[in-house]
Image (spheres, rainbow, N blue to C red):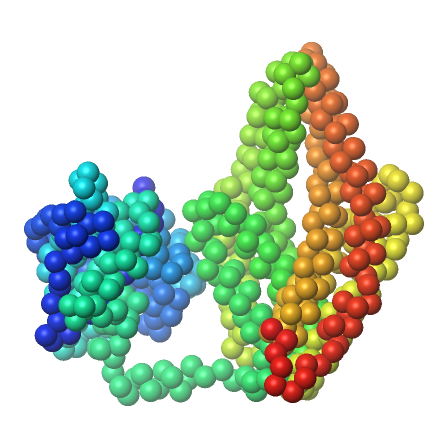
Length: 523
C-alpha cells in the first residue's frame, strides 16, 4: 500500500570554497543535532524521451536510509512535492504505474540514471526539542544508464526539508544564513534534473531540441497563439490532475472536469481559429470524459448539500432517523462509482483521448484567421457567446414558475459558463475588461448553479421521503428540507433580474472593444 507525504524543501549547491554554516541560533533554531551518515542508492526511471522529467515528475527505486522503496514525486507548488511511497520490490508497484499512466501512456519505463549519495543528516530543533527541519548534505555521484552507461558526474548538494506541518517561512528565514557561507540556491529542481543535464549527449540533446519543435506553431502576438496557450494549459491540467483523481485528492475530480469543459468551450468559442473538423471529435470525447467524472462529483456535491440542509434543522424538526437514512442513501449512490472512474482512467478510450489532445497541441489545426491580431476575434467570440446567453436568460425570465423556468435557467447557466471561459481565454490579450466580464459571468453562473442544485436536491429529497415512508419512518424532516430548498430557489429566481440587468449593461462589452492608448496596458 502506498503512502503519500507532502515534502517542502529547498535545494542548494555547494561550490568550491563554499561551506555549510552552523545554523544554531538562526531563525529559531536552538540546536543542530547530528543524525549520522547514510548511503543512498537510487535508480530513476523514465521513458526514453523523458516524459516524466518534462513534467517535473520523478520515479525512483531507492535502497538505504530509513525510507527504502519506490518513490514517486509529483509537483505540488513552490518548494513542494507530494511523495508517494511504496515498499521495496524488484518491479514497479501497480499503484505507482497507474499514477504515471497519463504521462507515460504506452511507453516503456527504463532505468535512466543511477544516483549514489553519501548523506550527512542533521536535525534543526527549537528550544523545546521539537523538529523544525532536516538539513542534509549529499555528496552525489550520478551516472547515465540509458541509452548506454556514461561517465559519472559528481557534486555536493544541501537540502533543507521542513518537518511535517512546518511553516514555509522558516525556509526564507534560513536562506540568508546559508548563502552567507557561500551556499547558493540550486539551479536544477532536483538531483535527477541536474544529472540529466550534466550527463546529456550534446549531439542527442540538439537532435531532441530540433525534433521537439512544434509544427505549425502560430506567431507570437496572434489570436492563434492566445487561443493555443489557453488550450494547452487545459490539456496540461487534465494530464496533471490524473494522479490526484486516482488518489482521491480533495476537489481533484471537479478541477479535472472543469479543464475538460474549458477545452470544449474553447473549441466552440474559437471555431474561426481552430478547425472544427479536428476539434469536434475531440469535443465529443471530452464530453464523454466530463460525464464520467461527473457521476462521482455530482453525487459528492448533492450529498454535501443535503447534509448541510440537515445540519440547519433544529432538533425538534428532525423527526425519525433522518441522518442514518441520508447516510445509507449516499452510500448506495456511491456504490461502484469510484471503481468505474478508475476503470475509465485505465481504459484505452481515455488514453486515446490524451494522445489526440497531445497531437492537436503539437500540430494545431489552425485556420487562416489564426494569423490575425487577437483583439477583434477574441471580442467577437466573447460577444457571440454573450448573445446566446442573453437569449436564454430572456427565455428564463419570461417562463412561468415551474419546470419550464427551471429548465431555461439550467440552460442559461451552461451558457454563462461558456461566456466566462471565453473571457478567461481572452484575458491575456484583452486585459482587465476581460477579467471583469468573466467575473460578471461567474456571479451569474453561481446564482443559476445554486438554483439548479436546489432543483436536483428537491428531487433527491422526494426520493428520500418516499423511502422513509415505505420503511414506516417519518418523512417530516425531508419535507421541511424540501420546503427550504424551494424557498431558496424562489429567492434565486427573484434575484436574477437585477443581476442580469447589471451583467448585461452595454458598458461591460464596450470595455472589451476599447483599444488602449499607445503605451498603456489593459492588464
